[in-house]
Amino acid sequence: MKIRLSVLRESLENLTFRRDGDKYERAYGHLLAPNFPNCEIFWKFFVGPYAQMASTQPLNSDRNSSKLKEIETLRLVGWSHYTMFLHLVFARVHLQTRMISSIENTYSHLVSACDLADNTVAQFHLLMLKARNEETKVKCKKRKRLRECEELRKEYFGDKFSEQFNGYLNHVRNIKVLRNILVHDVMLARISSPEGYLIPKSEKARLYMKNNLGETQKAANTGAEMSNFREEYEQAEDDTVQLEVKLNALWEKMISDFKNEFFSEKDSLRKFYEIEAENPEHLMPPSSSSQFLPSPVRPRQPYSGGSIIVDSSRHEPD
Image (cartoon, rainbow, N blue to C red; front, side, top):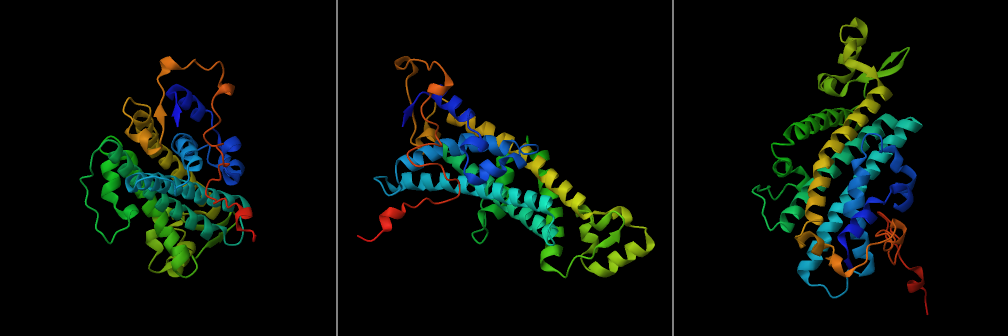
């Protein structure tokens, strides 16, 4: 696809979850907007051109193995990012509905979102290295999944973002401890109070791992450790907000790196998307944004986010 880069940039900037997303992004994208607006911004620039490329030319067309591998890498990053989005939405919905298992489900989805965020960063880092014709200096153990290779993500964020990355890691470790108690152990002992049920703060959850019921009973009886506890939904809301804010800070670098590479004079990253920059001298400037080429997420097939669209008519018997 040939397009003037200034036209493409403005077209992508105009995309929104509410108008151009799939049914889940349209319905729930606003839940992440207050604390994680970069989720939508990354989607605009990374998924926007990918949706155009992926749907206008099917994967089984005449592409060499190297090109197919590049497309698969784009798909992995986009798929991980989309699934992370869904888990954050699921957590938000449980905080709103407050079903009998909503606390357990909220923390399960938060940790799943962390795993998908880690995978997104790792895959994105490798993609950017390839676009720059560089290689990672990190050797991950073969038995480890890519998202478990913390050194790979440290390499990407470097010293400049080390404070943000370490803050994210510490928060993830805390909520994973609480999630593990909630999901893998006997039911988390709660303290009944006039304010509702109290659970350990995520940063204090380790104190109540070995003897969950006994230590919680002791805290309730003596009152000495009550500052370690908080109303369960207030705690879950705070942990969710903190995670969204910390992810938003990390995504700032990913968005900046992508835009700098994608809209630069070099065409390596654009080639992954099969986009060729038009010479601006050969094109008349657009008179208004409404006369741009069709939105990259409205190609020949409608954008469907994480869903696979199958033409059922192709499977009807003759």
